[in-house]
Image 1 (tube, rainbow, N blue to C red):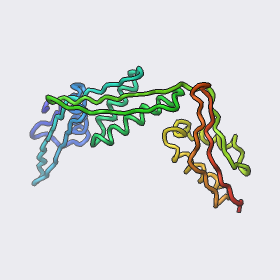
Image 2 (tube, rainbow, N blue to C red):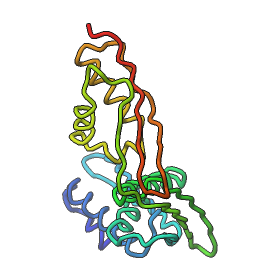
Image 3 (tube, helix red, strand yellow):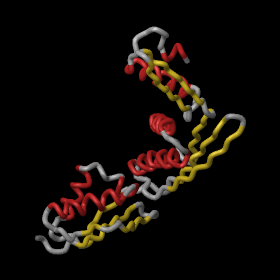
Image 4 (cartoon, rainbow, N blue to C red):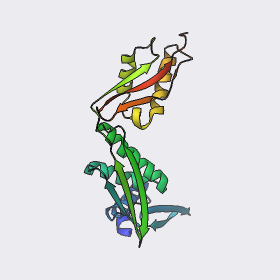
Length: 219
């Protein structure tokens, strides 16, 4: 660890070099699949001398397993990085599922379900993501029921411009909040865009996502 940190007694304290050293230690553990390693450096200064206390908890070897669909290697690496950056398992799993769901939506799997299981034994943790991708859709329309003062085409363009296409399925509240603010900017101070209704037909691979809109008056 000292070789990775590259901090020697008597040398000048250099935060940037130490930060790079900590990154090297974290990368070393990541290469060993110890994705939950905790690396902490405590700094204490006395009479012009800086004492460094390096505390490392290696944690278990973590195996991430994806079942149900073939997950691209670059996405698996993103999930690994996300798991490594997490603090506790529930948050890590939620972040990983969000990455997987975004990818599935991009591939037009709009009704996917993802479950995960965690098992531990002999210093090893196995995290299994069971992915039920569901049907792959071909033609889905985004509609706005009640939109009159603002053209539906404009609302769709705003979703695209703000790169919220995936959030229509993964985090719809982000879309409704953004569209409500847009209405208010145009003087519809009482406007409300509500959570969407999903009318998806798995047999025909087509459907419609409907956002109910209460515009109210324009002030």
